[in-house]
Structure formats: C-alpha cells, structure tokens
Length: 89
Figure 1 (tube, rainbow, N blue to C red):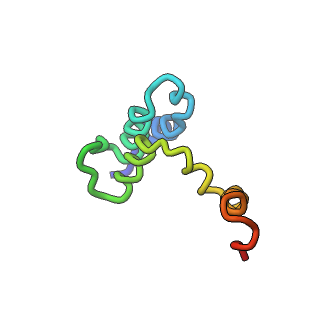
Figure 2 (tube, rainbow, N blue to C red; figure 1 turned 30 degrees about the vertical axis):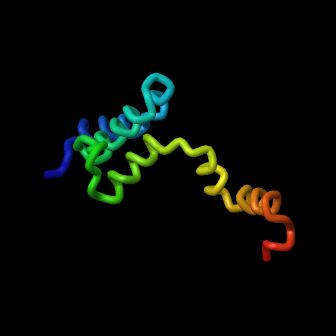
C-alpha cells in the first residue's frame, strides 16, 4: 500500500533528525534514525542484518581513529608521519 501525502511529508520531515542530536545520547539518536527509516526498532543486542550492525556501530564505536582513516589524504599524512616517506608509493 502506497503511503498517503501526509505520511510522505511526515517521513521527509522526520528523516532530517540532525537538529535532535545535541539533546539525546548517540545511541538514542541512532535508534531513532533507524526507526524513522525502517519503521521498526533497532535491535541493539542481537543485530542480524548488515544495516542493523552498522547503526549499532555508529552508535557505540567512538574510536578516535575512525575519522582519521575515513579520509584518504589525512590517512596518507598519518602514515607518512608514523612510517616515514619511503613506505608510500
């Protein structure tokens, strides 16, 4: 069954949840995002699908190296600093 106009409008509004981030914990924020996008609760303890595991990882994994390794140029500079210039092609 296709969603009505008001349902589509509500989904569009709710998908932009960035304004809510400063007011709730990261785990709550990711669970809410999952609920809005997929219409079901995020199983935090027993994730089965890749998407569920990804949302749980975004909520719980706060490793400071993650933003560093996500950017290729920054990672290259980091590797040069740690290993020296001779190791990179």
